[in-house]
Length: 430
Image 1: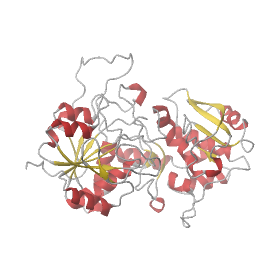
Image 2: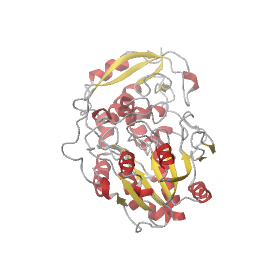
Image 3: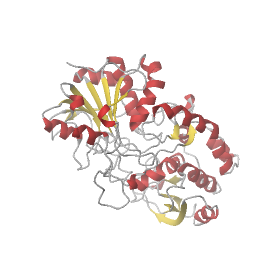
Image 4: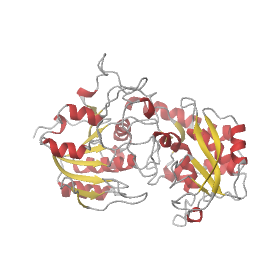
């Protein structure tokens, strides 16, 4: 079987995908919206040439679709030119039927008859076993990320890359735009606080596509964890630029997870997900605006929260007084189906908006309420505060507890953010 030359370090980029969009290509029907092709669209356009003659295993979920909402496994299976021997389902499952913290289990896909392996939370050893059992030559990754370090799909990619390197499998990433653009924000993960919501040292809002992250992972982290880099190929997008957000493109939106319903959710998520680390406040799970509706029990929290936030004149955002009852409480059962008072985060200028600075301001003001309480996890006696795992260290929590204001908290990570922006440059594709 013809194989590409082994590519160490950052990994190759498919030659047919590196060219910019052809000048004069058809304009999108929606004025001001850019026509963009994902790595999957590029691969389909090539007739799957990059995968011909190989036994392919696919890591994907419902977001792995082309511009006509056709799933890559269904396309490959129906093409007759790709031998798909396995699929691997991350959190929420391959077809997306499981809620947060759940999976679909191992079984047979009803549509294609392909074996689907339950890969949620899989260790490196389990990935190695699954790749060996399925006898794959090439692993293909195609999942829409949302640009935050604690969104777990990028760590599914990382762990499976390590396993692929260790058992000698080729790894192909079908790239997709970062829906919140190419800017980086927030604190760096520290080694002492790594977990399933942040395995390696990247900043909270990394501003990279999954293909770019794969290149960084391959060069910076795999040599230590796998003993070598993986044979990596990134099929890059066409016509995407770093300043573009999801709403600026014609790409279809498929929910990457049950509480990520819209691109608006993705825009605020790198910041307001920090409220997962507050026991007394819900991040709006089970509402129609998760991560945009933030609040605590009515009576414990009130309209003054939004008033104080609006008085700060934070760039690009306003706050609406909001009341709601979450129908999914996650790790906060005391808030389930209870009337909560708080705010709806309204982004009014996407270019000016900084989700992490905004969330820090929200936390600083919420900390004024006597009912405010950080979430503590009894299962982790060494690192009990969940917000520390989300932010990468105890710094944000301890500074806010000590009365630090927004500029002090955000300024504390300025140097490490600048260093990360320099570190990522060699791996950027757009």
